[in-house]
Length: 230
Image (tube, rainbow, N blue to C red; front, side):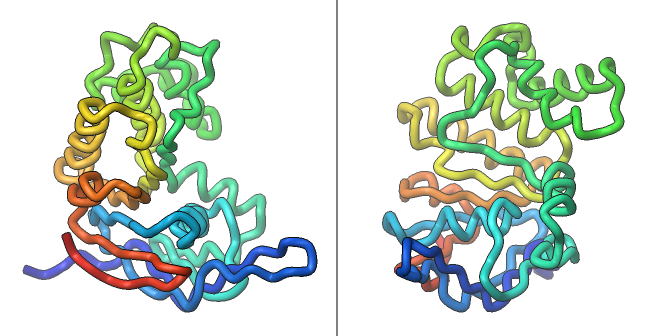
């Protein structure tokens, strides 16, 4: 079967951090592709560079050298302002600790990325409601985060991530703060977003059971990339 063309192209990426006078290398000559509609898991021990690589792909951080193209756009050449605008339209973020605003209802939290678009208030609310319906939380849209379980809060976060119909979804340990049942529900949902809606998902996880849900598995060890498939 013919594979999809790459939506993410990573070429010769190097990344180091400075700690005082010390230069600490984190990523070494990272090169790989992610096909459109792929579900990729990145695994590796703490300090292996997984989150750093995810942040580079998401445009949160910048590489020292190399090229990262997302949907044909070389994001390594963008200014900070251009990068912020690009992130708003092309990247959906799912974090370990949800990052919901406590004083906003679920639907209002989901609306937040839409304030950077030209949508009216009514259109924003309609889009947010549709996203919550996709994660089976339409009946909880007027509840505040404190009124929701951890699994429900993460589903709100997923709705917020997909509400702009981004090019890629990036998930950094999205099940790390959840019990096993809630974690399985979140992984089921991510699988469904990938399988039924064709979302390209990049998942960073320490959990082998979470990684098994992905269709492609890659390992980072001491900043070097090794390939593998679950």
